[in-house]
Length: 372
Image: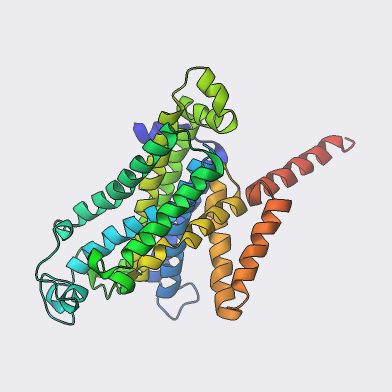
């Protein structure tokens, strides 16, 4: 009943896009598992892993679009929420290694044995359970977002000042996680994962399942996000974005609207990070890099801010370009990224989706002016 209500509240284009995401999440794993390797229709495991990673990035881009595109909060720290979700999943995966590690300790991960830890730190308890790890992948980013948003929004910190605060947050976390005494792997992070839910993380079937899970969570994120922005609450959010002072004058508690969407988007970013880690096989402090958060904002800008569909498209476009350029011309990638940001800012302020809408409107206008 709830699913039907959410589905009916979406516009036609978004419904078709959600179906496309689900189709990709179903078709690619099936082509990997059912079609034999010699067939031209076979999807290799590396491509499955790559698409799964892109889907995780798309979910992060959707989270950024909720706060920036619909509430006007330019967050440069969503990479921190993504990384925290990834670390929660990494802790679960490390607990699954057990005695198969290099040092053969059934309780302590290898890096703890190497650093002479005598017992498992208290905050690692419970992470041998998948459900607990996923719950923490949502709770930890949400709690951090709630704490930051509570003080920032109540103090009416907005604009570039809020962006700087969020960027400083992720930079501080990166420095903290580089320390070995954090008990989270230090500079090397966590890797050498063996299995998830009893299945080998290297198996093609596991990669197929993770790709489908990423597509499903992205589709679910699109449906729930559409329900939020299409509701009366969502209309108030866009009003806060466009005229915050007027909303305050009308008696709306602007801080509550901002805090809700900020916390919700952080939880979504945490889920994206939890899906990302088992597919790439590593999590380390570099995921907290402020550049990653800025890159996520670029995905949204390229695809189209405030469109839901645009951030997903932008994440795929930019990351495909990154994958290709870092392999073909690695020294050019950063310059290409900077040039892309300039071009989008100057020529495509509404992104790819906005450009498509303009071209479609012009085509319809020409047809209307054409003689019968």
